[in-house]
Amino acid sequence: MHLITMKCPACAANVSVDNDNTFFKCEYCQNQISIIKPTNINTTVESLNEAEQKTYSNFISILEQSMKAGNYLEAYNYCNKALEINPKAGSLWENKAICSFWLSSLDSLSNDKANEITTYLNASRQNDPNSKTYENIAETIANNLYVISIYRYNTLRPDVVINGKQDYSKNQMMNILNCLNMIELCYQIYPRVGYLKKVVELLTNGNIKWINTVGSNVTNSFISSNIGFDAKRKRDVLIRKIQAIDKNYQPPEFSKPDLTVLYIIMIFVFGLILLSVLVNLFK
Image (cartoon, rainbow, N blue to C red):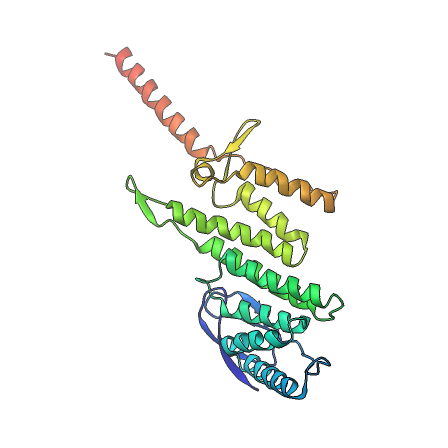
């Protein structure tokens, strides 16, 4: 058994992983993360001379060994070196996407980084449309990004105190919105409609109040308006996109507010009024 040390991309904790496994469950955040294996790279390129061929083969050898050892920074750098010689190698772009993913942690896995990964995968598809490994890599990266985004969405907490109450700063709300954007980006990497359905679910009844409903009137909440996010429109666009794929899809209904507390207050006030009337009556 060959153990390698790597960071959990969800919580950034150090984990030891058996290199033969296909996934691991982080003992800290309890998320299950798929281990994305490097793809094999053809070291022979007909257009290269003998010296270039030797250099290219050496780069590929170091790249593959680095990925197997979990040294993704070195592997990423050698991906770039090899791509300078052979930019048409789809498998190199796939490995670069894998390295880019593993180099990201909870703090650095931004939408820009996710878009970077998508760019590398698109380059692979463009240069090698018949790749037999592309779909599995794209699916695995998308699934991992989804797990990370959901975890981050659920763990971002109020970070300021306003009028004596815990609240979200504008910057924190942008961080939470970025999680929604990253879930939607998962669909671009691998077109699983469940990703889009999850965004609609979170916009409808998530732990953040993105949309207000009063009767049949549906409007953006103060939270959405404060960060310039048209949550209502985004939800409508996603629903139409999903229904174009899944014609039987019915979006979740907005949950009705819990009126229990309001009823208790009303009964309490009514009791005080009644008590006041009775006191005055028997004076």
